[in-house]
Image (cartoon, rainbow, N blue to C red):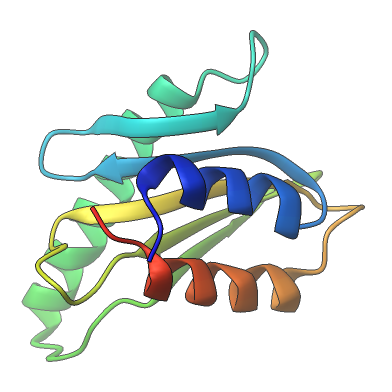
Length: 124
């Protein structure tokens, strides 16, 4: 089991092309922890904005009557991947991992694999 800080550190070292990551509470839009980012990439702003993405997807699923769970959401930009991995189980409802990767240096399949592993080990 790993803490928020350990999980974010694991993301920085185990996922190629890492730019930034955050553990986010989508009920409030607040980042519970961040790693990376910097002055050119404000993870607090990104966390709040991506909270709207998650909420919107839940509303759409409800309107469509879909009885399923969101595993992750992928946003592909010209030079970056933005991954949103919802945390499931063990009372973690309302949280997601947000990871930004350099598209040219990352392997999307491996990044998703690592995020699944990190999510499974996360204890909050």
